[in-house]
Length: 214
Image (cartoon, rainbow, N blue to C red):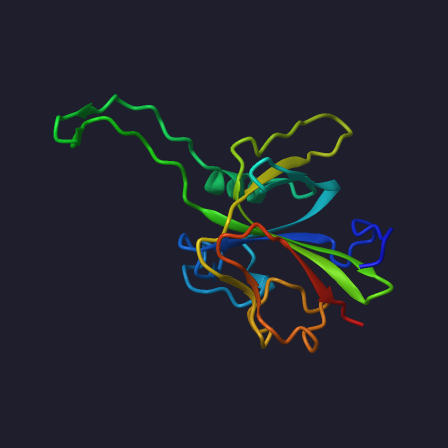
């Protein structure tokens, strides 16, 4: 990519798409309301929204990123999405009793949600290379998501924040045929992108240079 290009300016695709991912990270799934089979393309994103203001990517000390933005979507759909995917922290519960041989009795509490999501953003085109910067974060919805305000003559925007996680196995986000891809074929040139694009097991890499559709 050329130096000085502002990828957030004039993005090639105005929408952020969020996909369901199977708990073992083996595949991207169709929307929860539809079923639990593999997705068939961007029309089967779990949630889609235009955003207000910037997309903020904040690097964390462990090498991961936090991603947050304000959604232009407002209403039951986004609030239902948050209610469905916001993790519930493990409750403290009762203190377990440990026997001399190591077995534990009692105790325990509710485990955090295992729901995993893929956040996909298309960047702007680099005039020098003819490529866009595609961002794809395997993540969980942060518990602080869902803040909003209601005020006269103001937009009702909802904050979404995601915490990036490492894939527990290789996750294909674009197959060689382009038949199952998180990228928008109106933006990305699938005739050029004919190799599978994979989020690698145990890696935090989230950016891919993609050939822009003419």
